[in-house]
Length: 218
Image 1 (cartoon, rainbow, N blue to C red):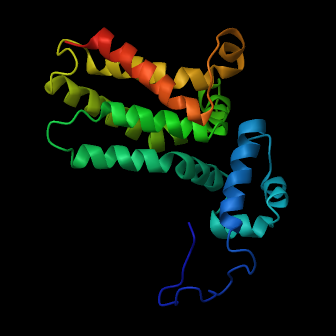
Image 2 (image 1 turned 180 degrees about the horizontal axis):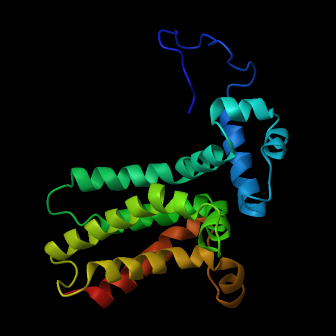
């Protein structure tokens, strides 16, 4: 998090703040996402990330803290917007609107626009002994999973999904359908003819929702 000294005017340099490009934090996040998704948490150093971003390790320490803090910031940068939308939908849902389709469409668009994110999660979260599994579980998966389950329950109450479905299993099925095309793309993409290009995601999302809703509809 960008640390700002209380009382400092906007744009004024704070004590100890590195001089230079104002976009350096964004570049560090972009490079870190690429390097972590390619080499894993253990396989890349903050020195390499800083060098690739045209920065220094001291700048990583200033903006983020340590290496694990940087990894968490990368996840927050990539997944934070969709989680914020999900939490807003849970706290103040529009009357009589099924919000599940909107969330799935947004989530699949996010994955299409950030293709390194699925690789990041597979490498350091899902793989045996994943270094960042607990971090992802507590900070992101628990929030996202429970939020989608709430949307499933809401769809059931609205009569859009069968009331006899187990909400946890229905959530598992829907998220599996939405995420696997991205996680499995290195293999499935060579066997099955589908595209993850951003302009084609609406088609894939519509297919996913159509299949889920017709299989689970009243």
